[in-house]
Image (cartoon, helix red, strand yellow):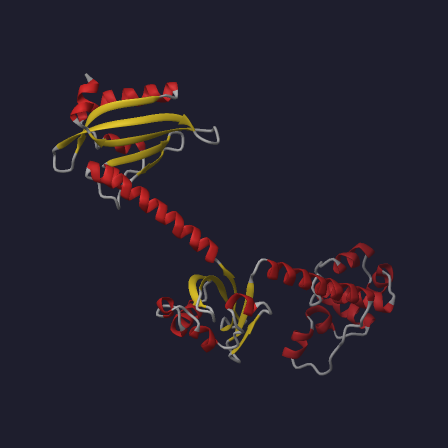
Length: 346
């Protein structure tokens, strides 16, 4: 429970003045359960609020709405909450939670930061230097460590645009460490507004994602290698997850069938449109038998090309149960047929 609530202030005052719920109920003229509800966050009407505040000898505005309301209304005097066991426990819990949060944050390598747009002050968490290789105290110092290829799009102008949009933002960018190494950073930020809807602060978190970027780069390299190998061998491929009707085709399959790689077929039925009408039934029969038997198949057919010509294609496929056992998929390789393929089909 926050200290800035009617329920918390009431509980502290009752503890400090050593008042029971029944005593309050008798004075205000309501039931004990009603008072208990107030201490749990329940609403209180104006007349009961005034009687309660008078009994507790506190300002009723402060009791119901807190210090900010008293300040905004220009009411003289300030009411201080007494330091009771409840407040001590509450304060200790806050300190403990903050300590645990800090430990978890540092263990995860997460750096937090806050930019006060009113005072132009920038604050980073204590583990800033571990991530950036140096302390950061100003935005200018941050811009200076950006990788040149990222500095042209991530700059003060970009930040102003994000603040104007008042929407959350996620960026991946690179920084240059003092020893010249490059580190990939993911930054998530949000703009905080005041009651009038004006941007007053920007808060964010940053984390090292270099390992993830390296893994993505390695995966992309392997994928490119497979694409190059398939292109050199003239072999295209497709995979279909039957129940989900999810179809994936390779770039070489698209080239083989004259399909734009930017708009590949997404569903199994779309494959038939690229097969000569006279060959569709035979190919479909081979695929269906493989599905029924969870077996391999081989079929020779004519691919219908966009220019109304055709290309003889041999397709080798296999039907298997998916890794999770909840579906069946077919994986197939396609290539331009050779004379030996036609002899094998006789």
